[in-house]
Image (cartoon, rainbow, N blue to C red; front, side, top):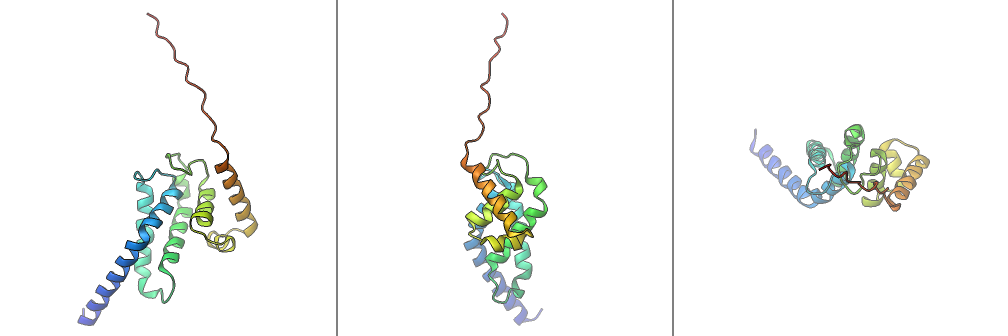
Length: 158
């Protein structure tokens, strides 16, 4: 490896480290919302983000003016959508009452501020369908969760 390639590799690594230092907390929060895990106990979200960041790093030299945050968010959404069946179990996160598709659309639209049309293009659905799923997800989150029936204690016979 030449001295020039080594210097380019160090520069690339520094740029990527700076990007991760600034973007990772927000992206991890988005991944945690997607996986419906509680903050601080989010191994699935961490793995999802690590894979998305690894993909961004591999593409780093080819971004050419493209926003690395947008690229990583797209990769995060695609990886979540591809493996969403693994993220359907209730884990105690704030969005646990939503389906994976509803979580994805709600996180992209509300938390990330992605436009409706861009969300639809990103996940491959018509805009009208994205709008309907978003409306359903918001309605679900605005209603009170069903309360479980009270436990009746059975007294042990003495």
